[in-house]
Length: 209
Length: 209
Image (cartoon, rainbow over all chains, first blue to last red; front, side, top):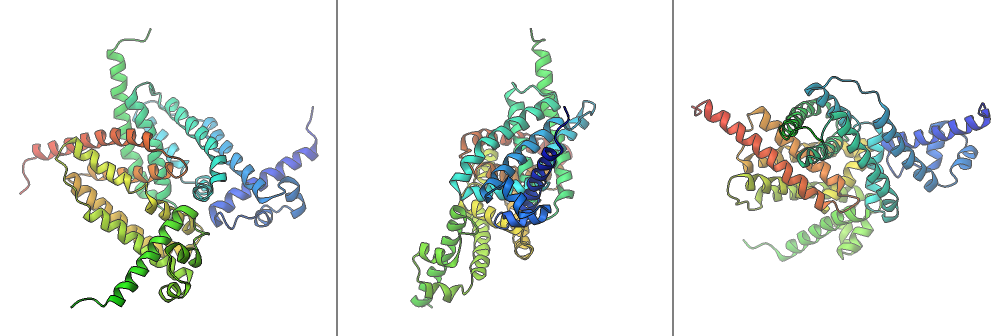
């Protein structure tokens, strides 16, 4: 039942190329991310690279899917074990905001911005973005232990995801981490109040049947 | 004391080129915004364009300054006459968010994203961004009639500006206006509560001497 080593090697090479594409997008930008630059960065020969990704479009498309899958996988599977209360709310907000400040977000920003002026790329991106938005919202609701059927809670969680994107954008040109920490702490306190009010509304209304 | 018509014409041409640069950035993206594309879009001859902006760098630099000055001028001078209360708070939030959804924001996004991978451009951009952030914050505080020395108010206004950027980013790939309206209304209600609490803390503490 063991996998063939050759297949493993091929998969590892593919993954190395995709990771190099993301780093290259984040650090060198959209235009500079060419097949040959990525191949050199990944330490993979031109021939092997072309075997996996014959064109730049193939490489970019695959790296987009890889980027979204990795983001979703991370959101879904990172262990999260924080006691309930405002500390937990703050930890959830911090995680959401952290997702918007790494290389993955910076690479995504390069792709979004290119897509703003490229309708074909935009069409490809939209379903991926929609799926990512849906999963992020669901995971946030679950980790917060929130009642998403409460419209106030629903909007506040949405606003948290929007805020995180805005904080990510503010971090692109300069290290905004000190200010960001203050905003995260402040926002978590606000969000926690919304959650507590929602929970007390539920309790007053009696247990669900 | 009348201005010379020739000087007027030259100024109008310059402005036309700068406006065409912003539209071109927003619609066609960073790489496609070249001197010749902008000249054609503005209906200005190559010769006249090169007289104003000998290189692409000159054109981009000038359009950045023009973009920031226009954004600040709009923020500062747009008439704003809304009665106090939650309606006013909502109107202020709406204005802040509107600034992040037009062509000016989309052009700025192209420049930010290019600057993420271009240290020289980033150095040029940072003081402009810092000034814009400062002015936006001050105008928001003034229009809200808020007490910015209250740390809760200060952070909430900052978070409002961050949220606006995040909502702007969500609008780049798709028309997000319906969802955005809900978020704006919801956020304004939260912000208004923060302002009322701050104001009642001030009243309890007695009048300032």
